[in-house]
Structure formats: C-alpha cells, structure tokens
Amino acid sequence: MDSASTHAYDVVRTAPRALATEAVHAGRDDLARQGLHAPPIDLSTTYPSYDSRAEAARIDAFATDGADPEGPPIYGRLGNPTVARFETALARLEGTEASVAFASGMAALSAVLLARSAMGLRHVVAVRPLYGCSDHLLTAGLLGTEVTWTDPAGITDALRPDTGLVMVESPANPTLAEVDLRAVAHACGSVPLLADNTFATPVLQRPAEQGARLVLHSATKYLGGHGDVMAGVVACDEEFAGRLRQVRFATGGVLHPLAGYLLLRGLSTLPVRVRAASATAAELAARLAADPRVARVHYPRIGGAMIAFEVHDDPHAVIAGVRLVTPAVSLGSVDTLIQHPASISHRIVDADDRRGAGVSDRLLRMSVGLEDVEDLWADLDRALGERPPAPGARRELREALAETGSASPAV
Image (cartoon, rainbow, N blue to C red; front, side, top):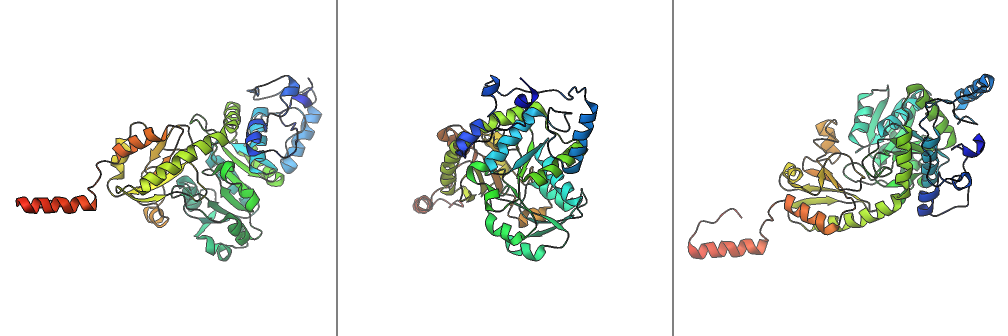
C-alpha cells in the first residue's frame, strides 16, 4: 500500500450521517480498504525520507499557514497519524472543519490564548464560572493576557479593540449554569467565541452550530470516558487550526499517540455513555431535589450526566461517607465521581470570586457514571446522613413529650 492510502490524514468524505454513526466511523473511514478493522497505533517519533528538498518544502509550507503537511509524516511534533484520526473524528462530531489535539485541556486553552496574543489580541472577555484552572490562567495573566469578567449581558460593552476572545462554559463548571450560546455569539460581533463544551459534549449540543468559532474540550473527561487518558482538543475552522498547529509545534504540547488511540476508541461509545449516564443523573437529581438534607440542586436544562447540589450540613462528611461513589476530582468516567469544588477544582480561584460565581462552600459536584441508579442512590442516601424528622413528626414528638412532662429537644 502506498503512503497516500495508508496516511491518516487521507479522510474519506461521506454524506451526512447521524451522530451515533459518526462516533463509530469517523476517523476510521479508510480502514476497510487497507484491510484493517482496528485503527493502528503509530508510535514513531520520526519518519525516514530520502528527499530532503521535498522535506524542506513541506516544512516551509507548514510554517506559512500551519496546514497538515501533505504526504507521509515528518516528525511527531508536527503531527501523528493516530492523533490525526481522533482530530478528524472530533471535528466531524462537532461539525467543524478541523480540530487540533493537545496534551491536556489546559494546553489546548493555552494554545488558543497564545495564538490570539501573537496577533496582538491579548484581551479576553470571560463569563464566570469557568473551570478553576481556566479561571486562574486568565486572572493571573500567566500568558500575558488581560481578562475582563462580565455576565452574558455585559459582553458587548466589555469588548475592546484588542479583545481576541470571549470565553464561556455552558453548562458551567461546577454550578451547571447555562448561557444562550447563540445570543452570546451575536454579542461577540467579530470577536471569536470560545465555548467550553466539556460537560455537554457534542451529544447534547454543538456550539459551532450556534455561532461559537472555537469549541474547547478537556478530552480527559467524556471524550476519553474511562479515566485513563489526559488530553485537550479545540474544534474550529481550518484557518485557526493552522495557527494552533504552529503553536503546538513551537511549544511541544503534543498528544501522545496512545492517548489519541484511546480517545478515538472512547468516541465510539460516547453517545451511548452520555445518554445512559444522563438518564441516571436526571433520576438522581429528582431524588436529591426532594430530599430534606439537600438545600438546592443544580441540573442543566439540556440534561447531562453532571449534578451539583448544596447540602444543609457538612459537605465534607458526604465526601467521607461515600463507598460506591469515588471521591475524586475529574469527571466523565464510566464510574461515578464526587468532589467538593471549593476544596479542589476551584480552590485556586479567589474565595470571593468563587462565591460570587455561585460556587458555595456547601456545593458538591457529582459526575454520574454507568452504575445502577438504585445502587448509587443507596450510597448517596447513606453518605448524606440521618434524615431530619418530617414537620408532622416533629409536632407529634413535641406533643408526646409534653404529655409525659419531658424536656423538648431542639427538633
């Protein structure tokens, strides 16, 4: 087989297909005609070439616009065939021209900021809450950026001539607050909207269809889906993808081929996993909302497998009390995880900013997995502690104590 037919960048374009079909087949369209069923893992860091003049021409072309070099691979930092399969698949799922994968979600966000800063556009407008480390990266100005925090209604007024980006999460981490992406994109005008779609995934929403020019994922989460791979990816148009590839080449934030393989495998079950976990999450959210030990439940209108809830008593006791649910940071795995954002994922955010964004000290965030709903509820019910007596039971207890002359406890 020649290199053109085996190269992962050689994408077979087909008629529009359903999301579930794309999840299984995108990035794999060329396998059957190569006599393959499972995607191969290409672990090479470098690739032989006896035509150094042609190599020079391809590298010059990459330096010009960041387009994928035509022909066989050159070097692992320029691109990898296994990773390219995942990039092709994710772009198809998000409905964009391209996507560019990175070693982590934060590496992906950093590349976006660097690409815009290189154009003299260092100002970012952002809506809280964001993932805690995203918030910190913007607030601290570690990459030379300056941020203006606002609510969705204030985006237009916050824009400046040097604004390079508007950033939102919807549903947001960890409160699951939602924004109208189409309205926000309109408010951005010519400034690109970056929508973090980690919680929703393309199964529940495709921000590019609502006007977002950049779609960010911590691929560590639902795209991988099994808690065993760390990655980030930005879905966008081909022009911006070229800039991101150039930043990735210069900074070295590349995705390992094995991670690319695991992500491609994870995408094949993404719709099934998200829909099954979402059904369980909706049931748990309803039970938590009716539970007197829970002060408030946050669950997005679009659904999903994430739940946030505030308890009346000590949230740390709930974390310590679970046995089936795993008390750990991260989300999107096949098993259910719970964490206390004020202590872990959003600890790095200033306490006043954190609380102002709705991240209270009693808030817990739960990523619902694929376990049976009754087993999960039994574990949560136990971890939430003793149920308070119902109002009618309190009144009956007081009357009974009054008849016996006993002192009335504080019930």
